[in-house]
Image (tube, rainbow, N blue to C red):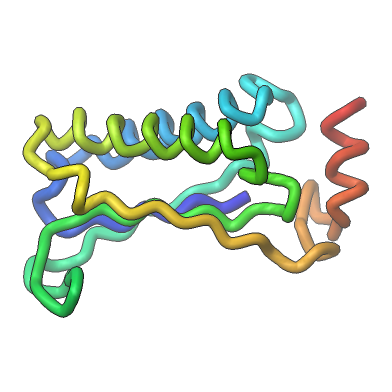
Length: 137
């Protein structure tokens, strides 16, 4: 389940991106009841991208911001409690790491539900049902 964290340059102190990735990953697992799960935790992947000043916008106007995007199976992030809890956690993680300089209004979160059947766990494409079975075992 890939996490992409995109940040305008200077939003977080250099090097703290790794801390943000770890904390956001842990929050996602926490809200799905999968903390330290032996199948799920190693299948949460992530990348961060630092975007140059002057290249990020909201409403057509230049801003400094943070974008958190997940690509997950259709069964993830479906419960409202999980959506709200994770959204609050992730926003607070970024705000805290920014030294509370980044306004909440400039933190954006979205989730993309991926096509079933091509999740690659251990080199094998898996369906949502197969992932569910692996998580349950």
